[in-house]
Image 1: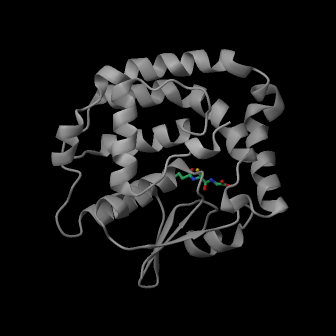
Image 2: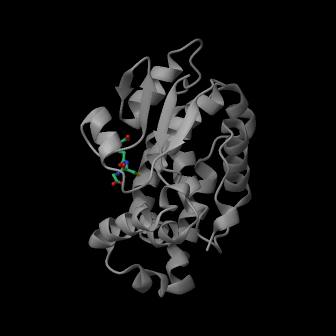
Length: 214
Ligand SMILES: N[C@@H](CCC(=O)N[C@@H](CS)C(=O)NCC(=O)O)C(=O)O
């Protein structure tokens, strides 16, 4: 069987996992330790996941994996992408990942099951953001703009009935983004956003992180 190497916290890995779940194509999920550099470098020449292993070949890049698997049988990502969704994602990126990273660093993800795996992530990401404890001390004030973004998203979303018929690459990017949002406790999801994230979680078989949210 094909193997998909991932980190559970990684939004790009969520994108690659989604296409298998949405198309009901079996794949064996392998979670690497976050400080395991040798395995991914041995496969694609860089320390980067997701990686798909198929018949002794390795494919990196989440969207290459999505396109490759969507070409198998009947494609499902047939609806055109909408620029307003890409725009919302890019507006939310910086705010989201500032709050996401310190929470992910403390969460019970399998890629952090060794102390060195967790320490590797903290060292690497704090180099970009500054100390995680300072970000966490921003408290609920920091959630105000994220809640505003969720309000902005509600009117942009397709109806769930439309989603049952056709999906697009927007749904891959947006669910991965909302999956990251779900590790942040205390956010308010407007009803259309809540329906959307639950629908795609169920259809792709990828649980949201609400249960470990802080
Ligand atoms: N362009 C890549 C980006 C993948 C990516 O940035 N993966 C991150 C995890 S979210 C990674 O493996 N970074 C190296 C590290 O964590 O050390 C893709 O879409 O597959």
